[in-house]
Amino acid sequence: MFESSRRRMLQALGIGGAAALAGCSNNEPQEATNTGTEATTTSQSDQAKSIDADQVAADPTDLPDPVDWNSPRNHEVTLEAEEVTAEIEDGVTFDYMTFNGQIPGPMVRVRQGDTVTFTMENLEENNLPHNVDFHAIYGTGGGSVATTASPGSANSMEFEAQYPGAFIYHCAVPNLDQHISAGMFGMILVEPEGGLPEVDRELYFGQHELYTDKDVGTTGHHNFDMEAMKNEAPTYVLLNGEKYAYAAAGRGPVEVNKGDRVRVFMVDGGPNLSSNFHPIGNVWTRAYRDGGLPDDGEFEAYADPNIQTMKVPPGSCMIGEMETPVPSRIKIVDHALSRVARRGLLAEVDVLGSEEESIFDPDANGSSHEGPIYN
Image 1 (cartoon, rainbow, N blue to C red):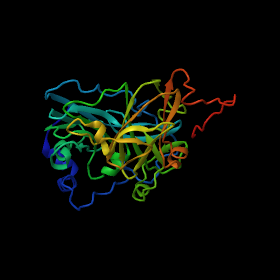
Image 2: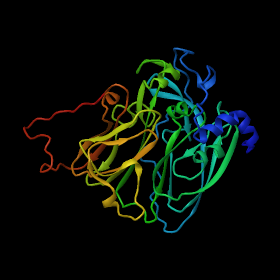
Image 3: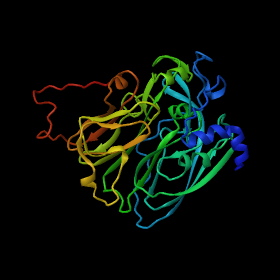
Image 4: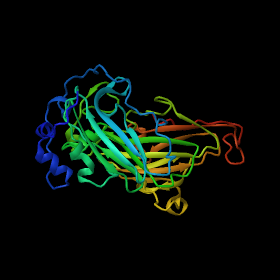
């Protein structure tokens, strides 16, 4: 099914554009045409399309276990580029581009010093070339030139993960901003040699913006709007690819137990907007700016303590930890709050357990109140 022919790949992509972009030259990528998945503002239909994926929102609890080995290992990792039609919200469809059918793409988790044999597979039924740029490796274009594959082909590379931290990976073909916006990004976590401090729960989120030819909530099929992207005027700003994907108004809150120390991994795919990442009703007790981790294991000295809002640029990551001393509903937001109230960005974490009135008494005057739902 898959061909490893570099000649075929370069002919499909255009060697000049691919090599120039991956090498960070000043040549601008070519614009999309009005054909196939890369349609611009021309509306093909006001009707919602038939979907071929029930969801693209990655389950934030589905991530690899922490590193528990203390010497270098070899890993074989494969990602599939998958173009799918799914719903942003009820009655609103969009043609996404994904890794393994989910947003963000699967977390890749290794230890500093590990070797990864990586294969990029571009499914035969896709329309476009795709590749992967890993911010966690030394090499031209983060490996994007080596992994570029046209539909029905695959390419592989091998790399050693030499520096620790949480890093984005993303598609980096000439129209990389469109491919990332449509969902082609994820995280590779390189743990230090001694691993990360132990926590009770871990969660994984990805923020990005969608640029479409209709307003938020307008039913029907939304085509990609290249002009809106050029103007950095998104229709939706999302966590995990769907409006309120893991909030009560979506697929439901994530649940943790009172007393859990919760570690949150977040990758900002962008392609253009920084995130102001904040847990309403909590704080990042320990936060690692841009996903940076210490080589020497001195986590307390390296991390920022008690951060209310962490700035996460597009193309970067953060790691934040929360304490959960009281039962509550923690709202995970971008504190540019119009993105929450108007454009669909919200996740919720329900902390389950008995009240701790000495810390927080929600019924001090004998009455209860409900907070905002942001919908």
